[in-house]
Length: 389
Ligand SMILES: O=C(O)CCC(=O)C(=O)O
Ligand SMILES: [Fe+2]
Picture 1 (cartoon, rainbow, N blue to C red):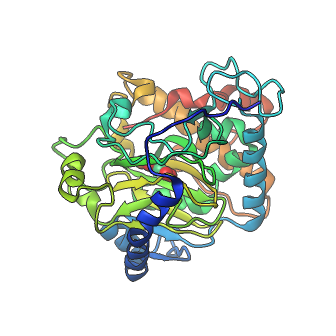
Picture 2 (picture 1 turned 30 degrees about the vertical axis):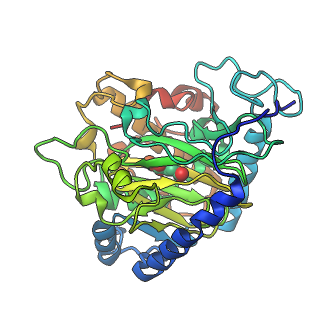
């Protein structure tokens, strides 16, 4: 029951767009190979990320952990996310899924799904999300049989995706977060980026942070970092692109960059190509983007980030869904409790694994024991307490 696109006469055809991007993608890929900044995760004997990885992350602003999430977990994540996608409304204002059944999430206070027109850039050049996407990407013209809208983002992985909650408690991921942001690190929000083959929209060049650019204590790590856990292998055509080292530069005039180069194909960028099960970390101050996915490979990235506690405490919500609200101790506590719950859910699901010890909740195992009642209390709609900065 998907409505079909009539005509959209502007924009290059997907084939022309791909041909145009070819050289840029090859050059970026080679540059990425030279920088490297990827490998298996390594910890020291205290359980913190090895100093050489921390240093490499500090220098370039990203790192790719190869094969961090095991195959069994990836299979479960794919299955759960696919199940959600199958139950998604067939468009933004639709109440039925692609098979005509009542869709998931209709009537929720916040829909789990964000839609875009195929191959479009919904945020570029708008005031959305603090206006951080300063310029608009090229929008290839979708094929005439493309659906009029496709899922772009899924919100609430800890509530709606059972394996997503377990992933949130992954001991290696949380140990990485503690190594970068301190033992009292806090979460902020999460989103599953969906870039369907031949349809996925772009994410225009941007830096994520919107709060601390003019803070007297500004430093390159003050806006935290994001994980992306890749459920499928990604390629230059569908993956995230980053501009290494830009997390150290302060706020960048992206409009001016694009004007100077007469193109969104900004020089010096690298694609974070991955195999499934690889996990990227990207400093939220890095200049980054992803292009319209005209390729035949899908990308699904479980995306969630963490901050230093003192970057968040006392700040005001600056991104659109929570503008103005103050992040006080209570809100931080509520939102961080999702980590404690995820650790316990994972402990129950994987009794052979050593659970992560989340220091702010030390000794509160009983209170944060995961079961259906505590799920309702502490996880349901947790995203309304997000801590975006
Ligand atoms: O995955 C993408 O295409 C964009 C992700 C992004 O902008 C982010 O994680 O901050
Ligand atoms: Fe981003």
